[in-house]
Length: 167
Image 1 (tube, helix red, strand yellow):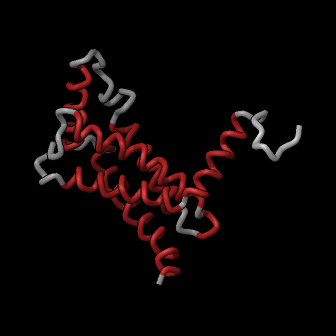
Image 2 (cartoon, helix red, strand yellow):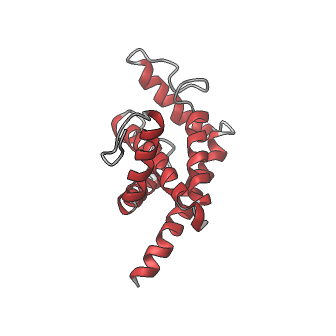
């Protein structure tokens, strides 16, 4: 039983998280009214402390920036279904945690609230689901995550020794 869970849980996670992200793109990339409401509320909130424009269509955290991050995450998650590309799921999960940490935080700690589009909190529930599943994925695949982060660290700071290197 445990072997089946280890084999198929990452696939199920990738399919669910990828589907949630890909489904949201139709709203973000078409400038749907629901997206306008959400990012408009966030920009109004940001303007209240002098950061007007942060969530507008050309802002640092625009629907297009967030949508692109979700697209990249979903592509990595889905490519990682192929066993030889499994490490890509870890990168996708890392991006998913970052994006969904922002989404959950904005729903909870700004005037956005958990039901900005009167959908019964469905959007918030999906964000929490993907966020928790992504965190769980990273916990279970922490060795891969550490390996990736260590590799990136060595690429950025090539002089950094791991203790086993001799220079």
